[in-house]
Amino acid sequence: MSSPSTKDNLDLAEHARDLADRAPAGSLEKAAAGSVAVTCATTRDFAQARTVLDGVVPADVRQAAIALLERLAADQA
Image 1 (cartoon, rainbow, N blue to C red):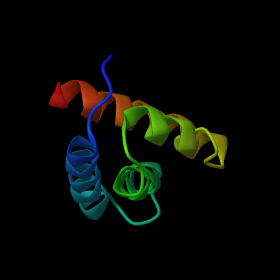
Image 2: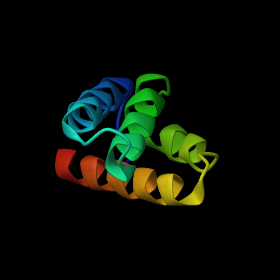
Image 3: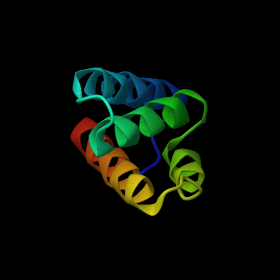
Image 4: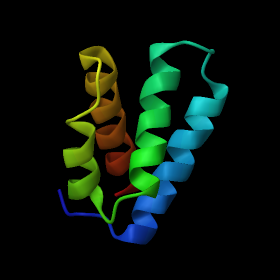
């Protein structure tokens, strides 16, 4: 997978924020999408965002966030 540019990361952040806004309060989906939104908004590219998400805890949020990031990046490609 090629690394999206910073602009692409901002697009990923926007999509993730939309998902977080629609997810039920307190849900795994909301936590994961929020994590992806913040991470993509503050990193330069997909690889850096992916690395940062490796540090998310708890593990279930980390796994869901990484899966969401990969899905959003694939949808954008």
